[in-house]
Amino acid sequence: MRLFLLVLVAFFLFALSAGCVRDIIPGNNNDGEVSKGQEDVNEGFVKIEVEGISFRFEKSLAGSVDFTIVPASEEGDMIPYPKYALFTFFDPACSVNMYSEGYLFVLPAEPYSLVDNEADRAMAELSKILGSRSLDTAYGELPFLPFPNAGQLFYSNVDFIGFTGGKGIRYITQYVQDVSPIVSEGLIYTFQGITADSRYYVSLIMPVGNPNIIQTWSDFFDEADYEEFAENFHSYIEQDREILNNSPDSDFMPSLDLFDMLVDSILIDNPDFLFEEGQSVG
Image 1 (tube, helix red, strand yellow):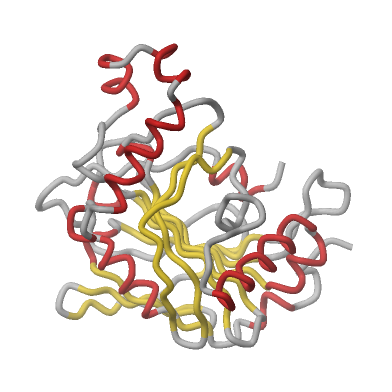
Image 2 (cartoon, helix red, strand yellow):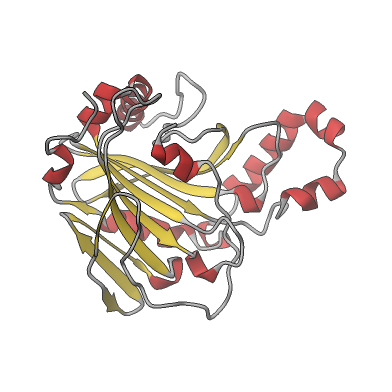
């Protein structure tokens, strides 16, 4: 199983804790080759700049950030992937919940598409969506890379946004492995984009919450009968999807504006190390 599937197999929960913000310390992660980023705190924002990749974010979004160069899969692995850059946002808003990490992936697009047909399909689908500005996808799901070991339950709050030298879509979703309700603790914000030169694929995946829907799976099943829920599954999903779509960005925790600002600040300045020898399987 690919490394980033293992990274993503558990999904993410935001539970905000007021007044709990630590210093940003880009630093140590034992998986792969690790480099330190640069810290620049200005009016509550932090700038990270490392290996030709930079971005800035409001400091309440993370307690610490690690940067890792993840080596390519080895020949014979079940699912191949190229060398990629991974930023891990630890303990967003000092959450006390177990799903409290976010991720920014920067992947070399052509090597990824060459070693993984499904990734190639997802990137082609994203290009089609961006070209037509239509969400009428052939697969009923929006593109999402790297692939989680689960299915996309729904998507909502879709917007077309850009970053320096690229563009993509952002949306709210939840990934599940069975018939499950939409709950706040399972929500994620994601941005899926590609640089204008088509060299790099950018994926931001962050935990987010919303007070207008059921908060936890336990809360839901304390109030609902599972058989009744399963029989009316699509109605439940569409009801909560509509609630989320009608929620202003500021209702989400954190506000979607903060994530959008992070995306807007992303700069991919030719991190050519991703194309160096050994970047993909043979």
